[in-house]
Length: 353
Ligand code: OGA
Ligand code: NI
Figure 1 (cartoon, rainbow, N blue to C red):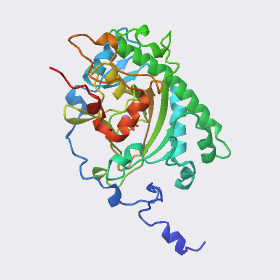
Figure 2: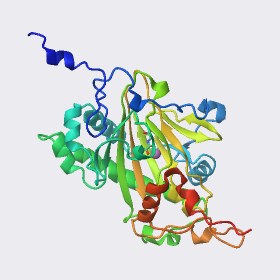
Figure 3: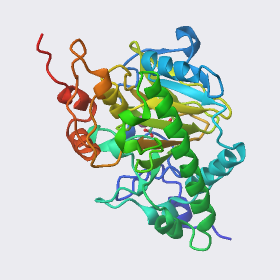
Figure 4: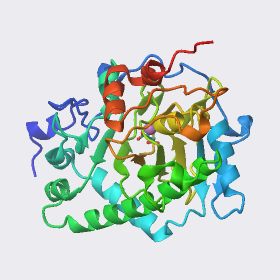
């Protein structure tokens, strides 16, 4: 076989597609479009040095207090004995790998269109930052069938089956964890009408954000996923035995260790509001590696889109006035689109004292 000019062209170092997506298959150095100056905006500390990110055993008889304490002091924790079958996590991991190892050309067939929520593409918060992230994502809201057909014309069902099963398990787990967190504040099922008579969160809304952080020639000047909080009640993150998620605690970046079989849970903006500020929403980001491709998935759990969400009445009294206005998730997301990391500040009720 003769080597042709077009073969030589395949090694062109950097390739940015028309939608801004970097072709990570061919990139050999970090282009200016992906070079960040402020990766070290805060110092990084070892998790052990700050007491370790809490790990909660959901079978512990004290699980409610453990979850509540972790929400209050960290806004983020890991859960073990969470009841999600190991075999499902393995299948899910295999599908994540299968998806992101497809050739870029194929992934672009399922690209997220400008007015769409679901599909393959850049990180959704890209518009708030001058530089692009070392990242590719796949967002699933509702059924993934249409996009899965474009990715695997001959076999889309295994992906869809695993994703459906994973979302079902996550919904159950998210409901359990939210009740542990709220229970720790004295909130009971009748206090949250939209959760349904048995507190099953039948009407809850959720999305699944699949994240891929390809190997990067220079991780010190790139960002995987920039500093943000989640616009959720809680988020449950799966990470495939590869650390990279960091949370901002007391002015330092703390790495969340990759614990085999554990899931990461973080407080989102809406739980911060519901708890009237008692549970902090947590700033977090993801960094990338030079030799290891990291995959993760965030299950984004929220309320029905048109229900008023505000500080829970039981938490409000003369000494504890509401800190935030009530609004629907749709309104919250709209505000976030405008104000991003300053959104909660904009919704804060000015103190009268
Ligand atoms: C997210 C997120 C963290 C990670 O998707 O919102 O924070 O580790 N992901 O990928
Ligand atoms: Ni996040």
